[in-house]
Length: 276
Image 1 (cartoon, rainbow, N blue to C red):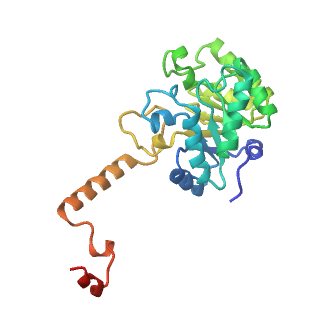
Image 2: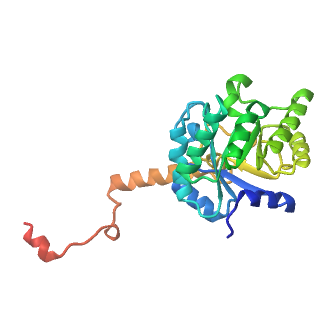
Image 3: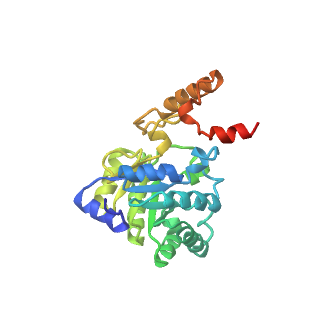
C-alpha cells in the first residue's frame, strides 16, 4: 500500500477519489486503522472528550496532543498523520503558532497540523506554511469556539453565514491549506464549497458532496451509547461486545473456570519437589 501524503490529497481530489479520515489517539488503534487502509489519521483534540473525559476540547494542552500524536505515529506506516493544534496554542500570535506547530511536527513525527478558523488566523496559517509545515483548515462548527457559538450547533444556515463560509474557505485555500474540514454545515452548502475549491474538503456532518469524510473512531465503532450525533453512522456496537466479554471474564474468574491448564506454565517436578 502506498503512503498517503499531502500531495496524495490533491491527486485524490483531481481523480474524484473519496478520502477516508478517522481519528486516532493511541498506538494500537492507529496500527489497526492504518492496516485497514484509512488514508489519514487525525489526532484530534476531541481526545479531550473521548480519552480524557472533559466536557469539551478547551482544556486540552500541547502536552496532551504531543503525547497522543507520538503514540499514533508509532503505529502508522502508510496513513497521513495530522495533529490538531489545541486551544490557545496558535491564537495569540504568529510566532506562538509557528513555535507550537514546529513542536508538534518535530516531537511527534506528524505530517501536518490542523487549525480551526478562517481569516482571523490568516497570519498564523501563513507563518506556519512559510515554515514548511502543511496545514489542514477547519470551518463550520469549530469546537474550540463553542462558547462563542453558544453550543454545538449547525453553522451556515443563514444566507450571510453561508456566504461567509464560502469566502473563508477560499481564503484558506489562498493561504495554502492543503485541505479543509467542514463540520456540521448544510449538505448543499458543503457541496458548493467543495465544487469551488481546488483543494479537498473533508466533511463531518456536511454530507456526501465533500471530497472525503472524517468521523471520531469511538463514534464510528459505537463505543458510547449515551450520545450519538445525527451525522454519525455506527459501523459496529463495540461497547456491547466489550461489555459482554468483560462480564464473561469476571464470571469465569470468580467460578475458577479461567485460567485453564492451557493458559499456565509448567515447572520441572524435580525442582518442584526440592521446594518443599
